Image (cartoon, rainbow, N blue to C red; front, top):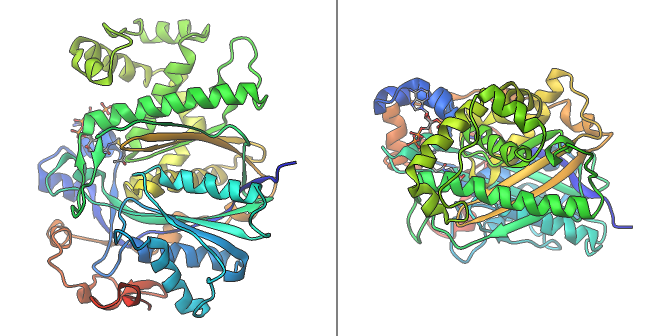
Length: 461
Ligand code: CAA
């Protein structure tokens, strides 16, 4: 008789500044087609001088509370998950509560609790599940939890990571009997291993990143977590597989970590190959491709040894590209993933928030297509460098339309201001004073002064 718990509602905040991929490509001497198709980016959101991950988190949270008619007394936990924290010991959610109390009154959240969570891009998923379990354990005295995922993805100027930047926050309301989506119980699965694919040492604003390694590790870790998920799903009876079926056939939509759009497409390809290669349908897939799947020299080797197996890597890439051209892949992709990738191309990487922005995108664009989402299962593949992956799933509830019908990404972001590459670079180098913000704040939290007690730096303007 475990309570049914899940995501009741969600709200986003995205900074209004952006850079356009064509301007960026020209400035860096890159073929714009590489960014549009190879990466899948058209606009990257950039934070203004007076915005930080705490302000974005508070803005998303305020929107959520107003939209869902939630008051501070209804909230028992307020967690913030981020890769771009502001202080070492002082948690980001304390800043957020400081800001919200400017609106709701001092001490209005005193009864609640919460922490900041860190594990690159996956920590929001842990926060979501720990809070769902807090409610399942009935420790919540009837109160809801809010989990906010908020990040600024910032890479070095001129680096390969620079075209996978972005900024924004998503606030999620976790409740019993959720209106939007209920988590499938007892199947959330994780893997974890000490790795250095992407990390940001103390005091460094931009990460050290091994791009190719991070891509492969993402695919492998999510696949391993998916294997564990599958085992639990079969054991608990959540899913029953008929002859010739894959567990992916029982997942109606996929929402995965999205450092950039193309990475989502690749993650789906990797997962489908893994799940399909032992099934009768694989014969038809390889027939359409016209070649068999290549094998590494040492299939049990380490990631490094597989990366060093250049013949295999080359053949595998060729096979992967061909697989992504097949009708089998494309049908699944169009039906189960494409809608979740729209926002990523318009905003960029949001680290912790990217998969949840993907969920938001999926809901909006499937609804606009007229898809009936009731009872549909969404499978999530969350990844955080360093590295850990979490796979879980949820079922869309009969009341989902209440939440989904009003979603409009463009309207939610508001009128955007395109930065010249020169302005963007000056922002990146912090050469513009925080008083000279490019945009004017409109009923939102922004930084209003520098120095002094950090908690007093932000104001509602
Ligand atoms: N027209 C069309 N496509 C083109 C092209 C052209 N003219 N030129 C190149 N491309 C394609 C390439 O073929 C490639 O496509 P496939 O993916 O289908 O193979 C794609 O553009 C990317 O090009 P490269 O393979 O040359 O990659 P890159 O050197 O540009 O680097 C990156 C890409 C590794 C993602 C880099 O941007 C990076 O390091 N980003 C930061 C790290 C990151 O995002 N890693 C993702 C996994 S880790 C993670 O997810 C955690 C996190 O959030 C950081």
